[in-house]
Amino acid sequence: MPDTQSPDAGRADWTLAVDCGGGGIKASVLDAAGTMHAPAIRVPTPYPLPPERLVETIAEIAAALPPAGRATVGMPGMVRHGVIVSTPHYVTRSGPHTRVEPHLVAAWSGRDIRADLEARLGVPTLVLNDAEVHGAGVISGTGVELVLTLGTGLGSALFDGGVLAPHLELSHAPVRFGATYDEYIGEVERSRLGDALWSRRVRRAIDGLRPVFWWDRLYLGGGNARRVSPQTLARLGDDVVVAPNQAGIVGGVRAWALRSG
Image 1 (cartoon, rainbow, N blue to C red):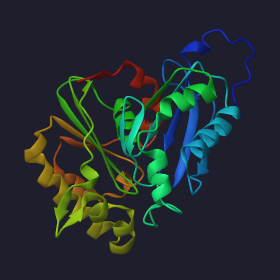
Image 2: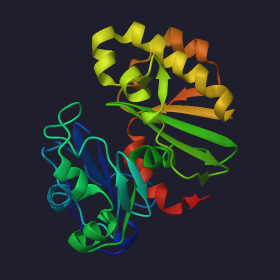
Image 3: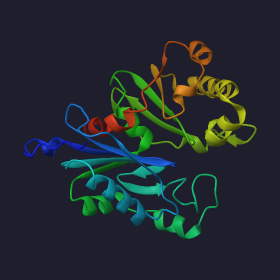
Image 4: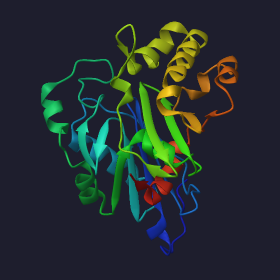
């Protein structure tokens, strides 16, 4: 049940944290220490999904949660300063791997979704790539830290000394036999191959990225990170750790302290 305390003191520091995925949208409200003040609410991502519908969906979830003084929204795709450069799922007719609709591509391209959300929610809002928000919830803030989220596709975020680097859409880069990372280790292939064979693909992809980034620590997050086999994790080394999926929510608080490179 939502927090029912009547005083609003301190709620300016409470954050509505929203994790927007291809299959579901999840949100909760957290205080400045990262403590949830309501169980996370999850709804299926509705399709087709023009920007206005996403804004209304988030507003409906927010109305069922305790009031917050600010909001953080993580969503898939390339987001720069709250403006959508591109998004992979929300431009489709009925979700990931379905037909791309040109009118949705046009509607999302260059959309200032941060301004839309601030106007609808009435609070300062931060919009980042979902892997960046996830990373904010797990990084130590020392050294070079790479975050890879395994879910519908591959998400990524890079940090150096706690400073967020400009976003790169690794998901669209070719990795093997002309397939992109999304196609090679995304949910469709995991379902087809099974966890054991899919885990080998994850290891192959990570081994290929190691000499590109030379990270001090790599965090594996997202809904499918828990499906990576123990044998694969053991072979990846001590500098690779599985992060809790809840980081996508907890990171909504810490994201406000991120510095950009």
